[in-house]
Length: 180
Image (cartoon, rainbow, N blue to C red; front, side):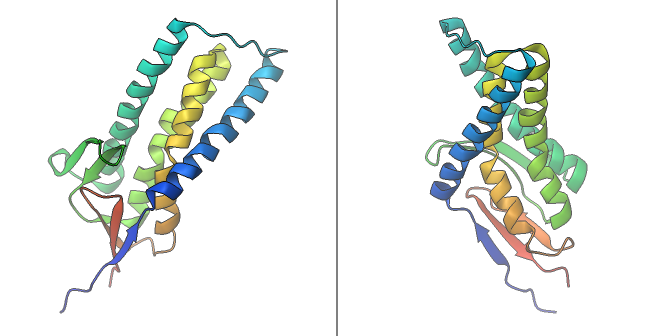
């Protein structure tokens, strides 16, 4: 039996960056509107402590975002920890988490979106509950930061659930093999 050539799905990082802007500011507007109604007004203030809190929180949430991809690969795709890697590609300006084995399409889609829920939606809910404006902005930023994950998810939805997917270890690219 002959090995088939994979279908290659590659992200356009400039397009994803534009989508990320919309996916940041639209949720931020909605979250601020919700906060306005919950608190009967919107009080905005700035301090260097808030700025420091934001910077540290942003870095920490990006690390946690990538960790949730790895955890998703482990839980949903049964990938051993030794077959995963993570890091930052400074040349492309992206953080990444990757696995070096085939994963089924349905499972990898779960692993792609899990960080969105855990580092975007959950912090937004917590921020609204405790009235933390900086955490609210961080949550919106991480929602926007999931633009690449959403783009990959959208592309993977075009393929059957049982298709096998291989993540490229260096580029925002996926190789899809039919499950014949």
